[in-house]
Image 1 (cartoon, one colour):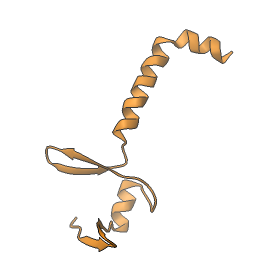
Image 2: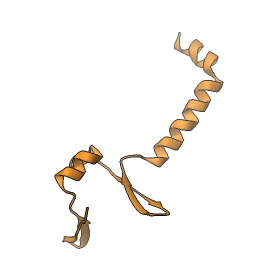
Image 3: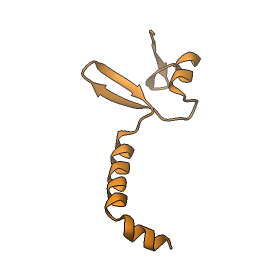
Image 4: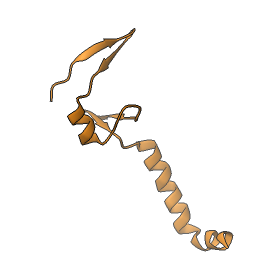
Length: 73
């Protein structure tokens, strides 16, 4: 899919067609992340920072499962 860079005020932007928005499952106001890959730039809804934070949280929950269970009671 070919996209064109257009002027938006003093900045530049890319208009995403409805079909691409639907494939990404995003709408106006949603956030996208641009990840640099060996093949180029990838637009995604995946937040690598949040994913890393969630991995740490899951490790803590696995390690301290019994303590968390007691705190929940």
